[in-house]
Image (cartoon, rainbow, N blue to C red; front, side, top):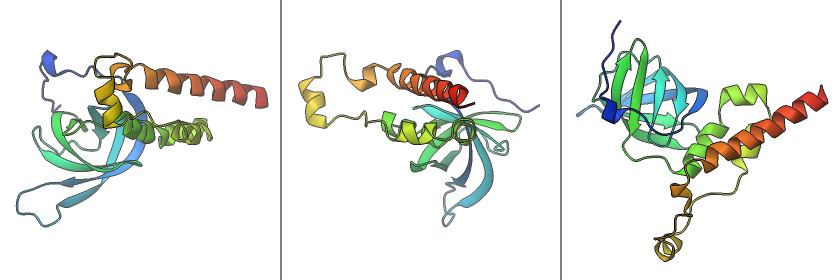
Length: 170
């Protein structure tokens, strides 16, 4: 078993969405033209700060890679740990709530179990605010970034509504 320990101060703290999404990753090797594509990476969970990918056991901690996030695009991540065939990665620049919402909405597991729920999530109003609003309300704790529970609760409510609709239909 190949694994590398992560110090407790580095352990994840953010809420993570369980996803199942086939993705591509590109190694950002110095001097390599365009990098190397690897098509067999499966994203298994995602948060604003990072993600876990299966099929990436050949990577090493500290490696800088470009990873294609569903509905978001290519993002730079650093491999933090490796265990068996899984890699834990941290985004160089964290995802915004809107980017996380889009990535969670593209979830293949979600699409199989609740076909319309992903589309409903994608239609939720954007959570980002303008820079001027942030300056005006800098000392107010109402900003979306200060309420990390808001997105998971909204998704849970939508999932419950979809489940009830599914039970009524069948």
